[in-house]
Length: 221
Image 1: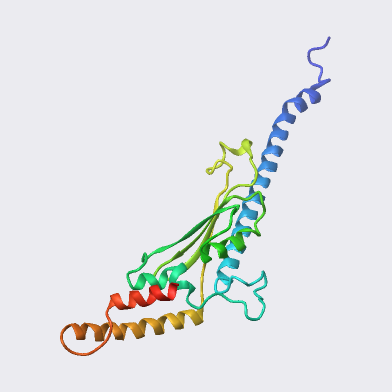
Image 2: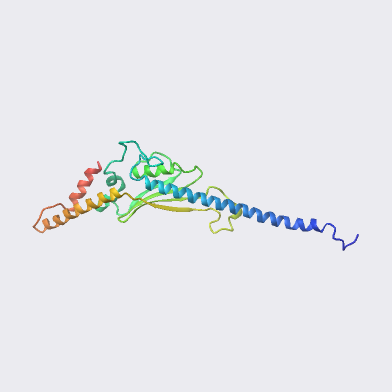
C-alpha cells in the first residue's frame, strides 16, 4: 500500500465538510423561519391595532368600516365605560383603560373590551398576547403585544430573545367629532365651575364640581 496515494482523499474531505455545510444550511433555514415569524407577528399586530383604532367610534363597523344605517354606539358611552370624561370630574381614574388576552374568550362586558375583542377575533389562532386600550388627557391608544407562533430551539442560545420573538405595536384613536364635542363640554363646564366658585364667594350663579359629577352619574344609567 502506497501511503502517498491520494486515492479517497476527496471522500475524506467531503465527509469532514458535509456536516459543517449542512449545519450552516440548517442555521440559515431556521433563521429564515424566525425572520418570517417575526414579520408575520409585526404585520398582524399592526393591522389589528390600526383596525381597532379605526373602528373605535362604532362597534358595529365591519372590516372595511361600513355599518348598517341606525347602528351606532350610545352617545354617552364614553362617560360610563370609556372613563375619560368621568375622570375629568373626579368620578374615575385619570389614566385607565382595559386589557384583553389573546386569544380572547368569553363574553366581554364593557364596550371598550368588546371593541378590542372584535379585532382580536380576526387574529390567527396560534398567536398569543394582549390587547390594551388606554386613555389619558392627551391621547387614547390601542396597543397590542403578540408572541411567537413557532418554537425554534436551535436558535435559543444564539438570539437575544431566545428565538421567541415578541412584537408590540400601537395605534392612536382619533375621533374628530368626539374631540370637538369633548372640547365644547369642557368649555361649558369650565364656565360653570368658574361661576360656581364665584357663587361660593357670594357672587354669581353656577354649579360646582360635585353637581357636574352627579349629572355624569345620571348619564351613565
